[in-house]
Length: 298
Image 1 (cartoon, one colour):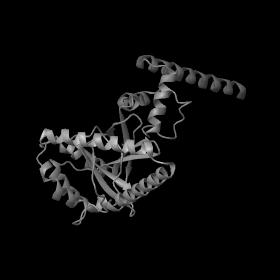
Image 2 (image 1 turned 180 degrees about the horizontal axis):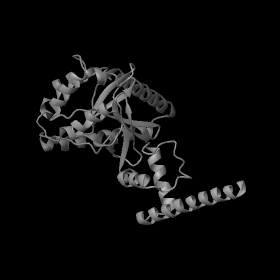
Image 3 (image 1 turned 135 degrees about the horizontal axis):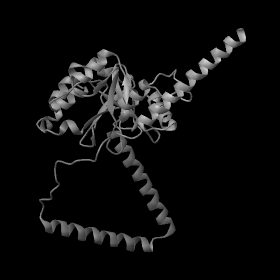
Image 4 (image 1 turned 30 degrees about the vertical axis):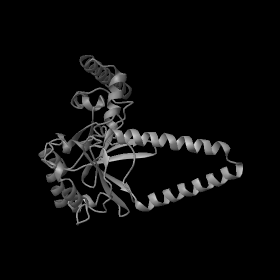
């Protein structure tokens, strides 16, 4: 009798498994997906913590719940956005200003670059992008300024939170229209701070409607503003160099340079090897002094 009971139990379990498989196939057919596509999409959501890390993708069968998640976060799968799980207080900071979309317990962060990642760091949204020899990190402040002057005041009002974004050995800087600030700033406020510098030196940019779109704040190690191409876009110049001097002056200057070059060429053609070595030594010393002077002026 016990054996017959076990046979019935085995038969019942086998039928349940067959029913689960049938329903799974039907769900995939309705969603127009293969098992391979389904598991690949789940793995992409798992990397961004939309799907629990306890889920085993290799053995996960299609369910209505999981398929609904795939539909809800299709832009994540397509690589258009990042999502970060954030406490309600942090989500409200960004959604209240219209900066990001809230989706359940997640903030939706549009991607600026294909390899961009995002996470919450010290209560703020941080976006990361790998670069040669390092990593670019962009901190998104939960403020929405109306113009450059308003932004500087917001930085001053929230300087305590902003100062916590960097280490004691690091400094703040910025790029405006692709041009680096000439100075580094150890803090966001104080008379020598970032906000005071903007308020004191960029009044001519306060009325420009597009200035907020072209300012990028940077954090860098040690001293000296960063060098290299703009973080975003190309450099924009708001002035055009003009030469108001007499055109005859330019012609005379060019002629003088040509005569001087010809004179030096004749002189070097007849100099001895000893004279050449002395000339090169003086030139080397002069170049070293120029480099030293340039370094001291920075």
